[in-house]
Length: 172
Image (cartoon, rainbow, N blue to C red; front, top):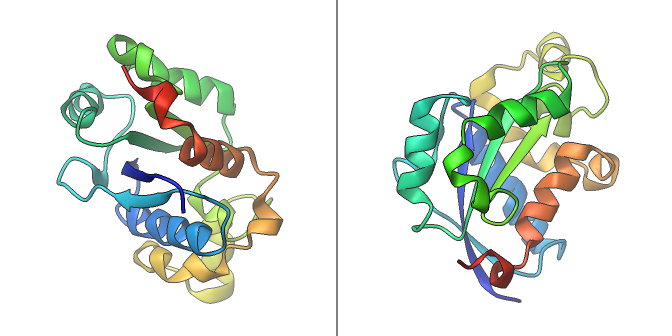
């Protein structure tokens, strides 16, 4: 094992932090990540948050020194991923020195369920139609994420890059 890294998870979905935490545990167990990852589970560091709001910026400012990394997840819902990334980034102007060093913005092409059913349009709808899926069940699908099938998804690549980013270059 490498270093211990503390990570905050900010998502637009209530059940996504538990799902992402499960994915991280699997990545560590399967040696995709060398570091020991500890998830910060404070009220501001493991939560649903509306992106592109002043509240998001205030929360990140509050936790920036409490965790090694802050991962902000946002669905693009079919919109241009670059535009959505820039929208989120524009609300973090005063924290711009931390972007891609300590704050990582991860944009899903559609939504987080794309890690369960890659390359599907509206994967949550596909899950609803085929399996009776409800959003609260998201953490139960952790073991259905096939890392080989999603390794080329930009959202997954950005996620891995964020988790593997060198902490020494993040230090201020």
